[in-house]
Image (cartoon, rainbow, N blue to C red; front, side, top):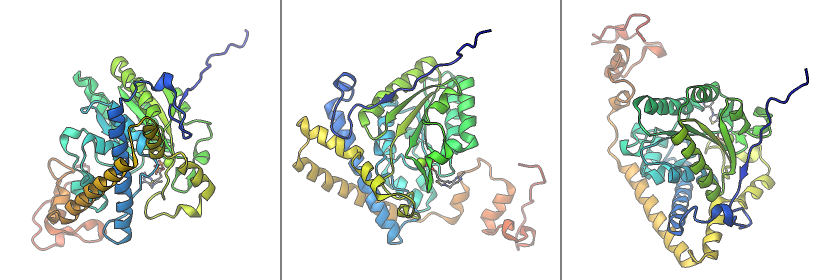
Length: 377
Ligand SMILES: Cc1ncc(C[n+]2csc(CCOP(=O)(O)OP(=O)(O)O)c2C)c(N)n1
Ligand SMILES: [Mg+2]
């Protein structure tokens, strides 16, 4: 029997506006109308400014740990631009820009990192889930949300974001497997920034691309320059069309880089070369759009100054709202997890004590609530 080839495959990489300002007219013409491009740039600038302010808030003790999004603004923004507003946007923590495009207020993000639960209460019309910090969990939520849409006969799809490190999690493989084999309309977008905190991508993915992981599940996939808003929009148009019309998942690897530390609790200088950072600074998604707009006569120094003043005002106002919000009632953090609070948590809420740190709630004065029997959960 001759040996037959059973699979030959290729993965496309899409780049439309590169870091040197070259623009692919064939792919890029008409992709993003000029007025929209200006708005997209303004959003990226606002997001960048919020990042700078959030960093200072953390350093001055006014906010907890914060993960800067700097350098990765284009990927989630391109997605939010292409998706319908009632499609689910299921993110981790480097997608502020897409969330802002959706209309999520800046103070929601600040409140989240200030440790205020209300920062997780994404207003319903935004169809966004709370920022997911436990790596990988949100991918399953996205598959579930999209599956629910399919089950109900809705046209709504889900789009989820995660990092390269998250593709090592079991949750990633479960979400992909489930979506591919049950025909679930979900767009998976991996923001490959080459690092999972201090772990380089090469250590946890020995394949040359992350995108090819999708092929193993029988999913269509593409790779794009994730710092190129045009390429991102091009790929998301493809992906969203595929999900909506074929009811199938699609995988996008957005190649990008975080220009800041992993979070404010990290010092990336301890494991990354400055030369690598400098190389990526020259590929900044904002700078190339600005240069492109100037070339096309859509932007000027005066407009840039006006914009910076405006975003400064916007961010200052958001910080003010976040810092002056009425403090939450202590018991409120029990409110959002269960429709009906289990008895042990009810007891914790009412006593503000927990047996899990060695106290026996039955001995707490005034404790009248019966603890659930074993197996209740
Ligand atoms: C389940 C889980 N394990 C570990 C962590 C600690 N942690 C936070 S971010 C991170 C790395 C994530 O890397 P990646 O998925 O590439 O995302 P990036 O931060 O680069 O955007 C880890 C291990 C966590 N938050 N959740
Ligand atoms: Mg990463």
